Length: 383
Ligand code: PLP
Image (cartoon, rainbow, N blue to C red):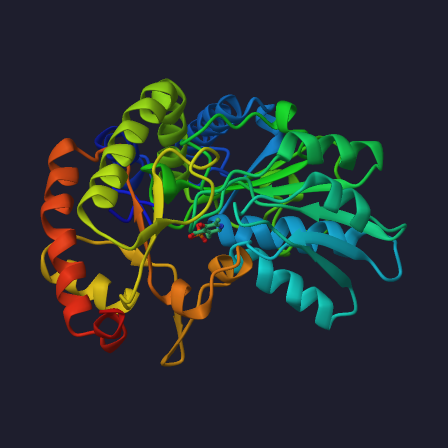
């Protein structure tokens, strides 16, 4: 129940990777036969990823994951701009890979506008238009949110960015493999994705960079990846990402329908069996696998531990930092109070989720909520 955190490796992905961990261990930059076998495998993966995104293979660069792709896109565009005081537009509900990058840029003299979201967790494209300044060099807006699954109106924002000739980046780490992601339709110039969110291996990702985009690289070294990202290629990881992308493209529709039906059954079941619970975000505009709920008078951390003890992994809407539980910035941004945010749980399904998983969760969760409420003074005070 925690597939937005990470997903299991697909067996087909593991099989595809194996030879490159053992016998085909060549360096993709070597000119001999070993190297060329590795290079061919990397090229194939580039085509597989490009196809999933409707991009050209030459526009796909492999990285170490979503965090690196986000950093490389944002620092890359802002630092390559010739503007003295560059301005960036993003949102308050981005993943920390974007938020902390934006904050670092602020320390270095850039200015950043964090466009607000409504209670659905969706931004208004007109807010983006209004935030544009002469010195705006980049708009970076996530495709789907990792906590509540809210899907952003990227097509409309893409049109605005193009009209004003501003680079447009999206963190699509949570959407790739779950919903259609077409860089032409969305009108993005840069996109970040991560293999481990779509049944691929951890520590490998990719960046889509529209042909002609001018970025300063994050790292300096050899001439790998068209001088965009130096370092010996992680061939098994890249092969795994390629196969994960091919599987995602082949099963996208079936995944969407199947996982949404299971998620809806889970959510309905919880709403029927548990009182004083509300759904966070817009139920009609979210990823098919994600469900974020607030249970009155339940501490999310206690809930996660109690569920874990019963064999079910889920997560809270809160991030634990230096011993104190800060309410999630996403849930705060959509208007939840700190208490409501701390009472929130994220359940996220995946390709291998089954009806039995849903039944097991529905058999366990109501009793866990009841036990936690039984010891809650606030629940008691409600009478
Ligand atoms: N962006 C989003 C929306 C994410 O959900 C995540 C991972 O949780 C990341 C970026 C970071 O990706 P990675 O784990 O590959 O660094």
